[in-house]
Length: 233
Image (cartoon, rainbow, N blue to C red; front, side):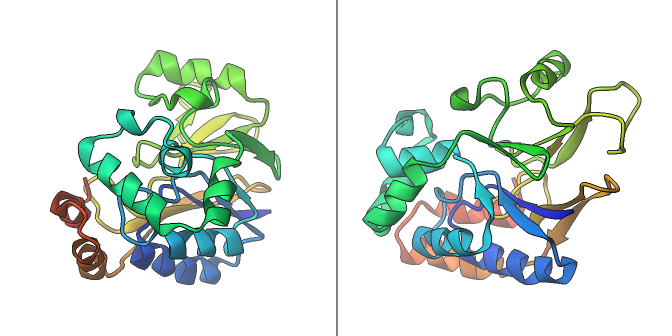
C-alpha cells in the first residue's frame, strides 16, 4: 500500500495546497496526517477543512490541542501563543471539537502514527538522543512508526547500521513539516511510504512563501512567523 504522510501544516495554506497537488502525482492509497494542522500560520479554517477532506487518519498535535482547548498554550513560544489564540478565534465550533477529539496515536494500514513520540505521546517529547530513540521502539508494535513535531525529516532504525527502511527491520520515520520546515530548506516536506516494498521517499515541494508571509501580515500575526518561512528554520 502506498501511503502519503503529511505533518505540521501549521495553518500554512499555500504550502498545504502545493503538497496536495504534488501528492496526487504519487497516487497514494491513503493520506495520513501526524498533527499540528493549526498554529503559527494565518489560515487555520481552510487547512482544517482540507485535512478533514483529504486525510484517512489524523492524530493530535500539541498546537492542535492548544488551539482547540487552550491546554498547553503556555508551553508554546510567545509568537506561538499569539497564533494559537488567533487560530482558535478563526475556527468554527465543529472544527474545534474535531481537533480536540483527535487521538494521540493511531495504528492504520500496519503503521503507527504519533505526533511527537509513541512512548509518551501526551508529553510532546522530542526524540533527540540515541537512547531516547531506542526506547521508543518498545512502545509501538508495528514495524514502522511515523512522527513529526521537530519539523526535521529523517529515519531512525532499531538495528544499528541499517540506514534505509527495508523489510525485516523496524523504523521511526519523521516526515518533516509541510508548513514550517526547520532543516534549512524552505520547501514544504512530506513523505511517501510503500508498505509492501518499504520504499520511503521524503519529497520537497516549492510553494508560494511570499503569499504565506503576506497572509501572516494581513492577519496581524508576529512578523517573525513569516520570516522563518523564508529561512526554513
